[in-house]
Length: 113
Length: 116
Image (tube, rainbow over all chains, first blue to last red; front, top):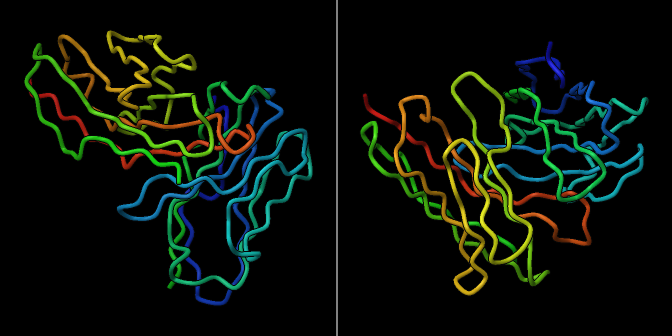
């Protein structure tokens, strides 16, 4: 059974619209993360949460808003979508030990037209 | 800033040959970051291969080894004899920076193709 679920797997959106990327983890972890990977760029850290509290935000834009409704959920809301937002978005989780292994989800591939 | 540079792929080797994938890092915000190698096998998600959090130490897993060299700021991944099942994308990553928030900085990834 998958331990980290990301929904949807693929997403196509139009410029200016809003989408929510879903992430649920069933590993019992208290820390969760979002990363993004655009074409020909490295995986880029976006946010980290611990016990549902924001620990670090490395995104320059307020259009990206994480939402943690439950301890094992960390969704990502993206508003006013732009073509440059096209990327694969990965959710990850770990124990709350910053040297611990991070477990990654399968990703949501977002294409903004 | 903090960054990771690794061997540009794809790297193609024959089965049973030795392998080295280079990784060097720059860590301006912390003297001794944590170092990781992650791997993505075809059709699978990103997973940890090995990690070393103490300078001078060596990590190993699945026949792969990497030594944390603070003098050369390197963390090269080596294997003495690769197998076809090692074909994957390998990512070097830097952690333990920015006040310990779990942030990892990744390299671009190196695609390894092992020929039978």
